[in-house]
Length: 163
Image (cartoon, rainbow, N blue to C red; front, side, top):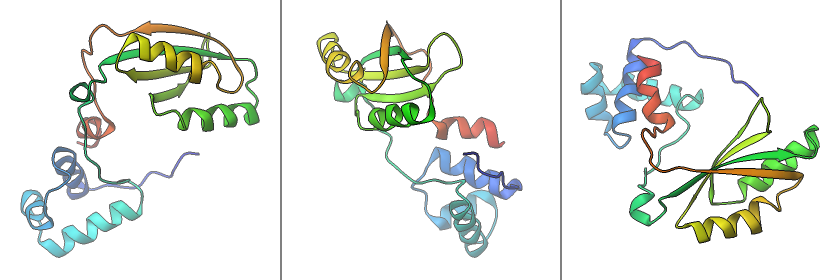
């Protein structure tokens, strides 16, 4: 379901730009950075949160420092693509922590999964015990990433989008 877009002025865009770089910035520093006083900055921030433009704040963790540097992309073909089957597949994917991203694809397969594990052995276990047993899976194809050339979070992308 698509949300309705909201109109953003230059101060709103500036708030988003600053927050994508430092989500822990104080209201006082944010206000100084965007050139407004504290009260209107705080009101704008609340409005952006309430409208769903800002969906939350979180720590960004380096998975490689946690030993999760084995990345695979998995094409998944389903036996059934009716809404109930897709909903069951989506719910099961959401419960699989090793699946970092899942995208429904228009093409020769139905989903593309980004899976992050510690090793090939771990990946083979996840594939056999989790991905292959997801509802309606007909088959998979795996591609192993040799190097991440560029990885951006949605927050990082926000800088380019809102300015």
